[in-house]
Length: 244
Image (tube, rainbow, N blue to C red; front, side, top):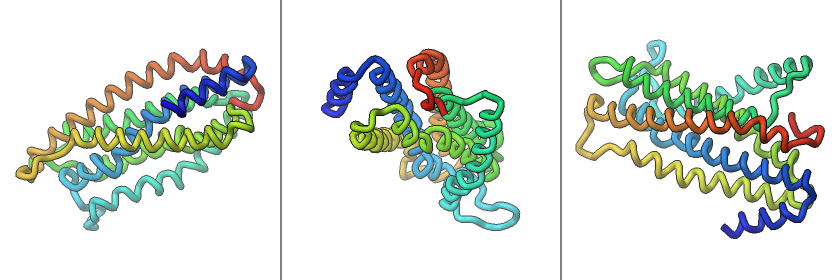
């Protein structure tokens, strides 16, 4: 609360252009909190889903289900140059994607990730309650792309929208939002907690799929709201060079 009060106190001391950019930065940080809540599901609920309800074999090789977490940095490394090439190509055609536009796109991909995890259990699980590991690979792809569109832009967003003399404070605020989001993400993950006496995949499956489907649908609704706000946020950002 103290940090938020200080943020708005400093924002109202700026001229209209600077104040508007600060407001946009604040809204994007709120959107980032929602993303990090989803991001926190990878080492928690999604990890336990992989342990309990996913086949532990790919291409004939047995794998440790915890190893699925390595897919996140893998996809980040693979997808980063691809996204960079797409941004360059769009930029050469004068179709720059603004920061307010990239954030809801990232949230949409995260929603797809959650809904894919839900579908993996609801539609593609076998008679034993186990689903294909390739669907988890796809889930991590969506989540990692969302990360590149939101988390990776966080520092660039601060540098583009925040006055130089407030840079250190806002960077600290950005990392504080991450900490708060991971705390909330841990709470969300508790909804997938499986009672100790339940070990049958057929019993754990509806627990995970139910939570993932709810998270995915809520995230889709949030994405729609964020997308509706994009034109307004773009109008508030009127200084050249803040749109990249």
